[in-house]
Amino acid sequence: MTRYEKTWKRDLTYSLWHRKLEDELTFIDIDACEYCAECFEPLALIELARDVGQKHKPSIVTKKLARKAGIPAYRVFYKVNKKGKIVAFRVKELYPDESEEIKMTPEEYADFLRRLRRGHTCPSKKQEEDRREVRKTIFLADLL
Ligand SMILES: [Zn+2]
Image 1 (tube, rainbow, N blue to C red):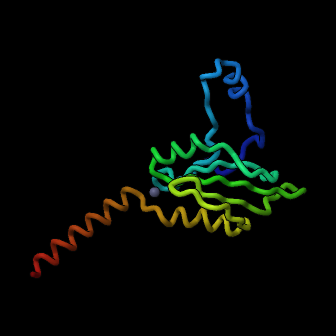
Image 2 (cartoon, rainbow, N blue to C red):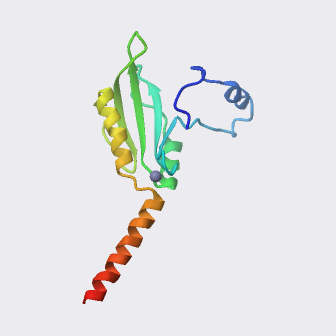
């Protein structure tokens, strides 16, 4: 897992190369994919942008991808102060429901990300829980 930014610069080489191709060849960057640190299962897609007061960010492809993946998608604008520190977030659910925009502090947004994790059970743990449930069922059946 890459925990730390390596260059602090976004390499645009591929993007600039791709823009020179025919108009029908289109792509977007997937801004962020929250995932489980244990099983690497994707948990949510996030359209990210620095908050400059904008009201909208195109998100049709991200919504379609989230629907195909069966995970939620969000649009997140983050406000940066003059010292380069994130001071606020504006969060909107895109999929499965489209919500109103919610303003969050950095702490509230971090809690939101933690809740995404808590709502997830790793497939291997789920299988184990299911096996325990089967064992419990058999045990109860034996008593009847
Ligand atoms: Zn997991």
